[in-house]
Length: 202
Image 1 (cartoon, rainbow, N blue to C red):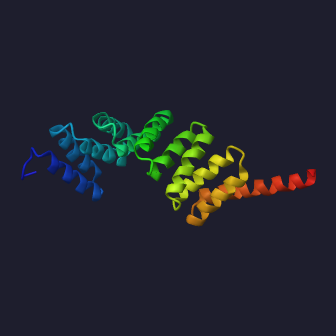
Image 2 (image 1 turned 90 degrees about the horizontal axis):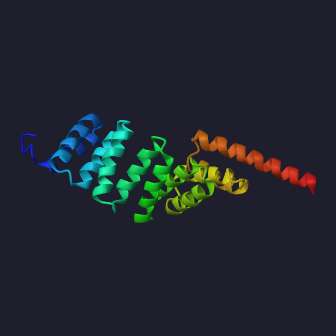
Image 3 (image 1 turned 45 degrees about the horizontal axis):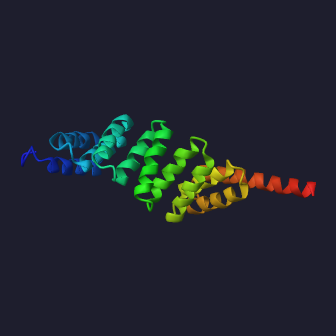
């Protein structure tokens, strides 16, 4: 940093450049310097959290993102990042808490709704997961993962017809996804079996 080694913004820009180049360790080094020079800047902490997450250091990412939300509790992206990194550490209740805050601040972010649905499903709150994932697909109907999640949430509540409908949409959007194909096959078989059983009992 020959121009001005005490300029936090320059360090931030260097960090972003390195992230784009895939140099995540170097990006972290630059962003650590940025927050050292200006520890009140939310974007610097957020960037540091992102680059740590990209290296698989989810505990370090959480630490940085907590600083971000402490500095600005109305930054939806920071809450989303915090929720995702908590989920990746298995803290699904903590993830839900952060993601609920994210969608409260920005209810048009399909990604936040999707991850909220995932966090709820992993806590076996399947009705809550369905509610969140319906919001996700309403906002972004082209996200195959959201449709798959919606299908699984419905399946786990015994709504096999609704599950099949959502999973068909997931497969149409991403025909190569083995998880969606396998789930659709199981649900379709179950629906067929249930229909035959009802016919026999009538």
